[in-house]
Length: 497
Ligand SMILES: Cc1cc2nc3c(=O)[nH]c(=O)nc-3n(C[C@H](O)[C@H](O)[C@H](O)COP(=O)(O)O)c2cc1C
Ligand code: SF4
Image (cartoon, rainbow, N blue to C red):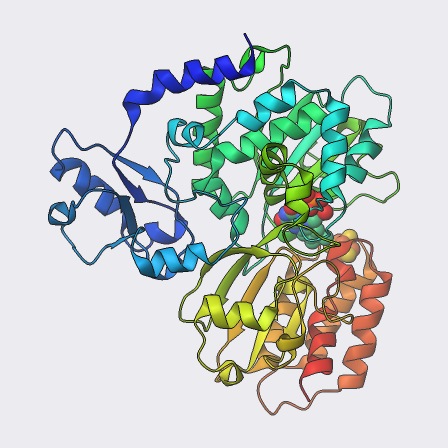
């Protein structure tokens, strides 16, 4: 059977499962009563209207939300609940460029039919009808870079693993996402779980992997459960396991919980924890692509990275390159929070202006009212809101100094926020998360804290001494955690007199 016929047969089987009302249930909306709405609608709706759940569409500021075509307002106990078709939500979503988050919130996250109806698994079908090398070439042509924070070219990593002669080759999906202020991978897993499975299968096929591990943050229970359910459905429907989509491609995805802690997202630490070893990084080289899981070649890719693959296969690398920045094509998902009127998850073209992004999607009326913007989590730093006017989102140090976009956390700081306190908190986080393996990070991050004192307004601090120590920690530490642990202090010295 060819893959198109396979898809048609599954789609026709699921026609009858069309759902009319979707309640958007995700981690954020659970906190504001989404589950209660779901249960109440199940009881109150007449039999001819079915109800199901999706993930959130990213407009977290008006959660909980439901998605429906018919007027069912009178069945709701609370008729202030927002419909995701309302203009307040549509304007927010439609002004984004959605590749990874396409249809998030408007298709079921519990069943496969919604995803299949929106071309789901068509890309995998097309990929399986080409050779793995053709897929690697296509991804190389698209210029896709990793979205886990380091923006390493995907095809270079893939080719490196492919160049190692081995019976076994592994793909690890990094869904650890431990750092504060970043919640995009959870959002992806909760709202488009089948897209992640499709992306991982495409990557594994292209790189001739023999196993896939999905490593989910130990505290992301909803993401874990939703992915587990989606994997079970894929297995039952022939999208996972043996002879996928009726072809000779056979592979499993094993889902597992992370070992806990920010450093577990660092790829070599992650591998150690899968092998049951201490939660600390490995010396490199060798890199995981040469000697990773069980000393075999291993590709580690982020959730968001992999979710770009189906779109690139369906639309082509040239279309992908039309979006975003010439050096870093495509989109980036931003977790926008803090002192904004409309916090949420937004997907925008790479190269978007940072200040515009905060004003437009955060609905911030006067950007100069903010005391600063924290970007990229504890491995990055804080900039003044005026400096954001000249910065655009992309790889590396976006200001050429100490501020990185990383995985895409953007937190607006209110006028009342004491920036030094924020810098101290970020530094404290790094000190607490240090695994202790190397001296510059273990001792240096503690010394930084001591030198900052309480960090309260008016505390005299030795900026030169702090800056010098931060530089040493960055230069001498063993892994990416320590190598970026000085950045909050360095950013403070640069942007706040
Ligand atoms: C301290 C630390 C934490 C990290 N946490 C994550 C994480 O949670 N998720 C992630 O994908 N990458 C994380 N990374 C980056 C990974 O090591 C790796 O570069 C990434 O998973 C590769 O995927 P990509 O190429 O698709 O971006 C972290 C790195 C460091 C140093
Ligand atoms: S830099 Fe920090 S987290 Fe990394 S190995 Fe050294 S002590 Fe551990």
